Image (cartoon, rainbow, N blue to C red; front, side):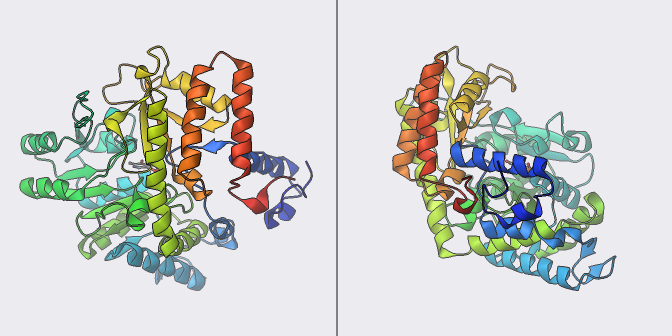
Length: 434
Ligand SMILES: *Cc1c(COP(=O)(O)O)cnc(C)c1O
């Protein structure tokens, strides 16, 4: 390839490093010619890309606007203040911190701000959809705090009341028994609306604080498709790169009473200098998410997930909890083929150009590395302009791929169809390779 193959202004600046330039071209091509169904991914706007790739990356800005440790932060202060004000306006929050490098950092800082080391925290079980930072054995969180876990109710087999939703009786029982200092709501693999109100009631009944981890639904909340936990929870953490469609990173909003504790937990408690180029990208994304078009986007993401869920169910794949109310479709592959693992399904779908991830299903008999499930998401494909008709087609392509897993010729045909489908929905039209 040559540097004229795609038209980003950055290409010229990278022309002296053909190795990295080539890899950027390869990845642009991958993102443009395969289906991005990973529920935690999205496509940012080119405005977000520009801010993230800007000269702001050069500046050290330890501290907060007006209280920096180094000189030269006049402009940086304006950038970070703009991001904070936009974020407060977006969610109607009293205080915002836009410095977390990731959602995981935002969560650890929230724990640091709200409770003491050794305190008990009640959060969602990892194998039922909780996140690593909700007390996984492998995470620092489980070494510093004492986690107790709630899960979802059992599957019933009854299509009208399928179960596999958060079991609030269990949450309340565990809260009464373990008297946690903090209750965490939020999930990485859960296809239902998470209502903050019952969590607040249970937290109040035992004198616990309440953290809502909105990493996944942040964009659906900003776009009015899901109820907002802001003002209900004491602290709300989220990622900026999932449904919110900003640059990779985290953020925290909270009531004023926790502002000081949250800010000092992020810096100097957990992080050093903030990534002000990413913070500028967050500012751009917060403004985009405040526009009326973003409300439409959030509604479309949910409608597309419903269409995709119907389409994969029509292929004989069981949906965990019987359906979806957000951007995720959680598939139990055992109904489709008892021998098919999530790992093999993910690998064969990758060969067909359909990118998604294996996932445990509640009470999965297989290990987290193998799994019996797949997690699909519609945030990225909706950004490219795909609608329910494309979701129906994608569901059928998934079924064909999984049935053809030992048939290279059939997989090649699906791959060609995926490529053709993607051609009509380029994520970055200006970046398409010639
Ligand atoms: C994605 C996610 C996070 C962490 O985000 P990173 O930016 O990857 O650190 C935290 N909590 C939940 C529920 C998530 O889904």
